Image (cartoon, rainbow, N blue to C red; front, side, top):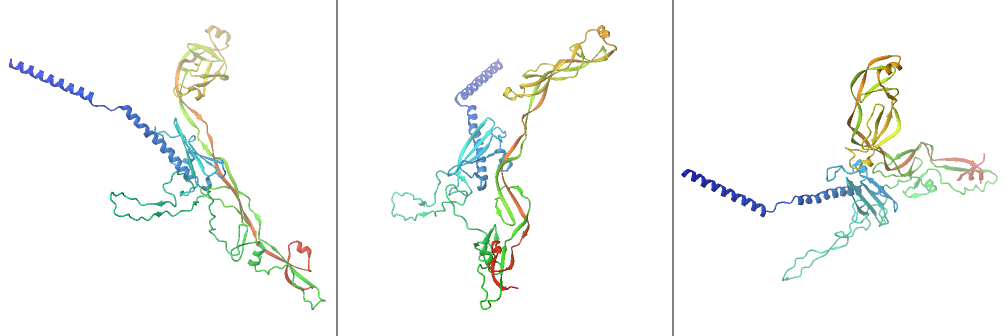
Amino acid sequence: MYTEEKKGNLLKEFLMKLILVIIFVLLLIWLVPWPNMDSYIEALNPLKSQIFNANIQEMKDAAILYYTEERLPQNVGDKKTLTLQQMLDLKLLVPFVDKDGNSCDVTESYVTIEKQETEYLMKVNLKCGEEEDYILVHIGCYAYCTTDVCEKVENPVQKPGDVIKPPTSPSPTPTTTPTTTPTTIPPTDPCPTCTPCPTCTPTTPPPTDKPKACEVKDGKYYGKDGREVDEETWIKECTTSPTPTTTPTPPPTDEPDKEWEYRYKKYTPAYCANWSSWSTKMLKEGETLKTENSIYRVVEDLGIKRVQIGTIAPKYKKVIVTHDEQYQVGTHDYKVCTEYEYVVSGGTLYQITGDWQYTNTYYRGYNPPADTATTRWIFQGVDFDQCGSNCTNHPYVVYRQQVRSGSVQVGEPSISATCKKVEVRSIPTYITRTITSTKTIMVEPEKPLYGDIHFYREKSCLDVRDASYNYVWSHYNDTNLLGQGYVYTGEYREKK
C-alpha cells in the first residue's frame, strides 16, 4: 500500500514539473523576439550594390590612367571608346565578377571619353547579367592634377594661396591673447604640367638637346655658335672655302693691255641620291612619334585609323532537342524482289526506289513531326528569339524535310507476278521512338575586333652625297654661269 502511494506521488510530481517546463517554454517563445529572415536578405542588398559600384570604380580609375596626352581626343566633339574586353587585353584590369559570381559583359561594358570646350566628359558603362548602369565623370587638366588628366574636384580641401589659421581652443577666462602667425600656402603654377590643357596655355619648356655648332639637323642650319642661321650664313661660317663675293676684285689698272679671266664657284648642298622604299609602321603603346624630313631620313605621320586588330570568338550554347525518329529494332525475313531495297516500318513492308532528297519544306516550332519510312526531318538549328527564357530544355527548333520514293508492298503473289527474280531477305525493321539529344548551337558568330591604331611611314637614304663646290674660270659677267647659280670667288688671273 505504501509503495503504491509513493509511486503515485512521484508521478504527480513529474507531471507538475513537465507542465511548468512547457509553460516556461511557451512564455519564452512569446516574450523573446526571434530574428526576421527577410531583414537578413535586405541587409545583403547594400553589399551587392557595393560590389557593382566597386567594379565600375575600377573601370573608371583604369581608364583615367590609360588616357594619357597622346590618347586623348584632340578636337571638340571627338570621342573615343574603350571596351572592357580591350581593357582586359591591355592588362589595365584583372577580370572581375558580379554579385552572383558571373563574369560581366565585356562588349556591352565600355568607357567613352569626349572632348568638350574646357574639359573631357567620361562615361563608364557596366553591364553584369540583367544589371546595367553608368556614371559620368568630368576630367581635365586641373592645377591639382598629378597625371596628364584627373577627375574634377568640385570643392578642393585647400587651394593654393589660402591662409592656414592655427586651431584655437576656447578658454572661459583667457588671461592673454596669443599672437598667431598665419601660414600661407605658396601658390603653384595655375597651369599644371599636364598637356594638352584645355583651360590654360602652358609655357613651352626649353629644348633639352642644344644643337651643336655647325650642325645640320632636321633640315635646319646651326652656325658656329649653335644658333639657327640661313644656308648662306652657314656656308660662310662653317666651310673652309673662301667666302663668296658678288663683286669681283678689279684687275690691276697699270696693265691695261692684258686680258683677264675670273674664277666662279657653285655650291651644291648635301643630298640623297637614292632613297629606300616607304615602310608603313604602327606606333607602339606609350611611344611618341617624332616626324623628320632630312637628307638622311624622312618620317611622316599618317594619323589614326580604325582597323581590325583581332577577332571575338563565337559564342555557343547547349540545347536539349526531342524528336520522334525511326529506330531499327531488328530484322524479319520476307520474300522480296532482288531489284529493290526494302524496309519494315510499323509492321508494314515498304519498297524503296530512290535516295533521300531535300525539299523546300521546313518546320518551325516546338514539336517537330515524326519520321516515317519515306519522310524524315533533319535538324537545322534553334531560333533563340522565339524560345525566350526556355531555350535549353524546350527550344524553338527548325527542321528541313527529306523524302525518298517508296511504296507499300502487299502480298507475296504480287511480287512473284511483277518481279523476274524473287528471294528471301532479312529486312530491317523500324519502330518510331522519341530520342532526346544534346546539341551545341552557335548563338553568336565570330566577330571582328577593331581598334584605333596610329600609323606612320618612314624611308632612309641609301646614298648620301656630301656638299661640294664646283669651280670654273670664265670672262667677267658670264651671264650663263651666273644664271646657273655660280658666284664670283674674288680671284682673277691673266687669260692664257
